[in-house]
Length: 341
Image (cartoon, rainbow, N blue to C red; front, side):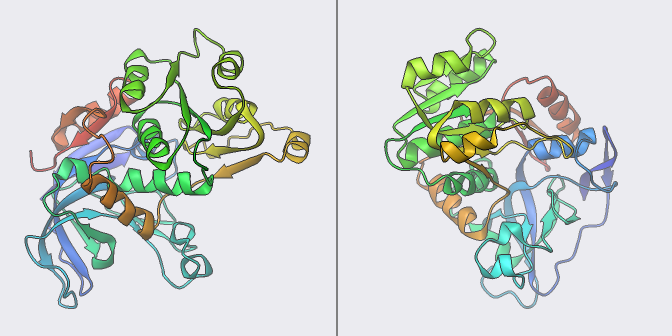
């Protein structure tokens, strides 16, 4: 089978390798679509520590082609979305339903304590408990189940109340998924801050009420004039200065959600007195759980989330390098890879 391997920072090699065989509790899935995530880009650039060589890719869907001898609920031909986060199911976090915080988490092609080869390949082995059937939903849409599951986990963290005002900083693919989720979950007013024209237009198309260009307008001035106090501010880029900006926009009793992946050694400066006196909260969110993954599939199956607006570029495995280059240049939005193309 063909696979795209990161052999070093900024080095992608397409090679032939043996097709894997599923263990007793696993499925062998032929990958039909896999999205490129910012985490993949961080692995590629070297800003996120991983051991090379490795096959990235963790936003995927495909067709079951073989099942391990211990698997009864799936069979050849089943169409599935893949949850790449494999918890130990034994630690305290797992037992409390927070599998994303598993102390011994394994990721199929993503970021975790343990990483196994991912879905930028024609085939991947997956534990049978890590897939959801997608019925007739197209594979490209189903590949959004993983990032959408992460977004659901994030929205869960901030306890949105119907009618609250939300600001999302950054309108990449994740920011646009968050806009749609907040809208679906009952947000009253949604403001997006994004310097790229195309992304601001997409934000308005998928449900934002206002989209401002922070290079032309100062969010600290414009946002209060537009909406008054902000209940929830989300940083969806991974830039420390923007985390501080999100916090500064958060009103009394509000929540600041850190969603974007910041550099591992980054720090930010926040006022502890503001946290104390205004009862503000700063909340992190990491990955997804089996529950949020299943809920993501349901939302996608019922057409609650527009993914067509988000996909701007499509490649075979040979185009993965080009996809990374476009992401670094902030060209387009979601990049989708089809390993068998």
